[in-house]
Length: 112
Image (cartoon, rainbow, N blue to C red; front, side):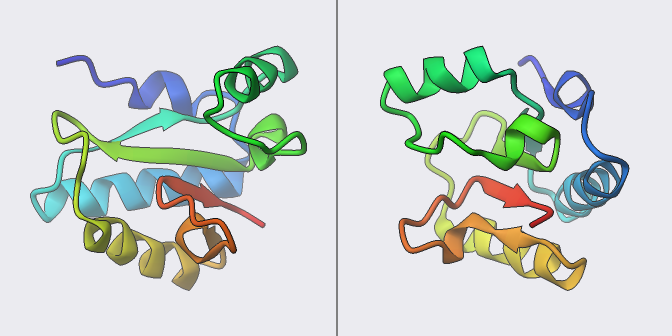
């Protein structure tokens, strides 16, 4: 299976890049096949995602390289607690986990 992580780390702000690499490596060392499925996005890509109903955010942290979405390779419906564990680690590094948003987005991790 294709791992898009390296491609999707391109263009991230340095602090978010470092945290994303750390989180993905922590997941993988624990045996979870984490991948970065989205990083920095263009306005056009964000508008496409809105049109597809995949997000409602017009002012996303993805637009300035301050957010990543993480999933698990080959496991499309991974348990929420897998994301929550990563969310807790991400928050320890000073970021925000989307699982705590008023409309939860468990795949989302941003630098705030």
